[in-house]
Image (tube, rainbow, N blue to C red; front, side):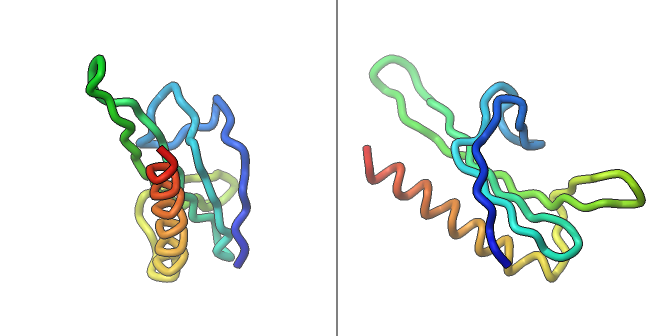
Amino acid sequence: MSSQARQPRSNDRQEDGPKNSPPVWSRKIWTGTGNVECAVFEKTVGDGDNTFTAYNVVLRRTYKQNEEYKSSQSLRSDDVPIAIQLLTQAYAFISHELNDR
């Protein structure tokens, strides 16, 4: 299994991600029957001098049913180790971002 890095695009949106902003980090791993993808979204929270950056993580599985591509937040048992790997990478990204501030 290899992960594939990709640059976020403005029209690239996750189901639960912010509607107008692309992910700041995203990885996708092919599982043999579909993809498990993890994305990190960044949002500034607060007002005036009391602002901070919050990160939201979205995980989804994409698969093909008949001729149509579908996505789900539900994982198969074989997807769990891949999800753990992606979530660990997402957490490392967020930790790195927080430590650089």
